[in-house]
Length: 502
Image (tube, rainbow, N blue to C red; front, side):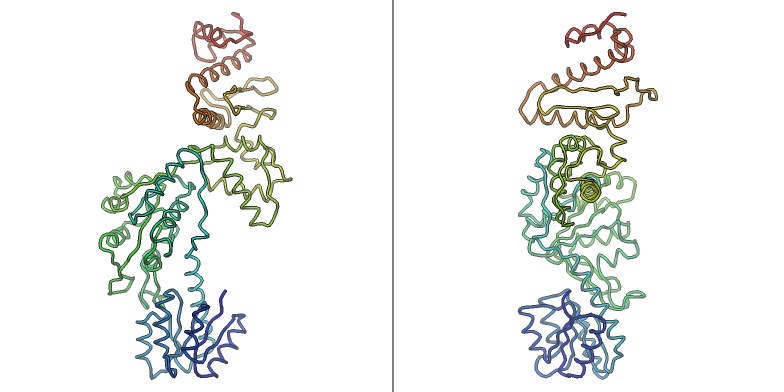
């Protein structure tokens, strides 16, 4: 945290504030004039600035104006005499955070500075430097389409609506759109509209004037002002309260808004990127979302694929997240065994990339040893999903090439009992592996993929049914729900051995 700067030509004022803030373990730096402070701004900045108004040479108001021009988010507290309240009013008009009237109570002064400090740290937390923007990983065709869209939009300021399931990386894409736009050097401000209580969301978006409501002791800039000349990312826009949708529509329409309790319009030069996991068209039909706002936001629509649609990216993402997690914790990066990686590739992961990242964090902390096997993964995953061949339960194996798809019954040889029509535990897992195999074959340029995989699928089913019925074709046909002539023909076509009529 940066120090608090105190600017006052009165040495006793500087001394008192320095000692009081030192007792609070807050670092300070003092200046005897506004000119000295302005010179220091050439090489450094404070977390909070406390300045007297009346000083020889550069006045506090001049200092305030110069500071606000360069650092609009920096909280400035002005010190003034009771007889100088006109200057205090002028300081508020110039953007001051609050004022201290002489003689001031030192405890109240420290409390005020602490409030300004909290505001300063809050402002800093929403400004993410471009170099900190996480990269988007993906080689799947669905992600390549997303990359192409970001490239096409790179020179545009158009409004974008990002849709996709929770955890697919909508904010990462919004940051990438900002990073590759003409506004890249300006702020990127993100706000999850579903995470802010309804009664606070208006102030969070548009700011408020001093005295606008109980507790509003100072003017506060909202996210629109923080994002001036940059990008404002509104996540979960589908959850925005209906009355606030009207205010947002007005900003998008005419580029102006009013702070809560304010009477002067504030101009907004902001690019808006919105995101939602909800079906906005349905919410419009249900009367929960304004149709005119929907059309304002839906200028360019960018849909993010779920992780199920880009399974071939899972190994890349796993390695990336394991390296990232290890770096954050200062430990050696763990490695996934081939079986464990295949297992993860077959998982459904409804939480998408976010769930995969959390899983990798868990692995880094909890998994024993440096090479992670399937048995080392969280029990709720391994109990609900199929495991590689050699484990218990239904084993699913798909080779890296054309290979064969094999479904092996439990090692005990006993029948799998389930409710009529129910699939075994983790059936979605083998479907995911089948999708992965199809994607690999298509990527390799193979033809007749459906015929090849269809024959393998039928062969696996018939072989398993025959094993279950000890080779009796009639019984196998009944269990599979096909005719006797059909199974006889399939056995001949597929070259399956071990079948008998009775």
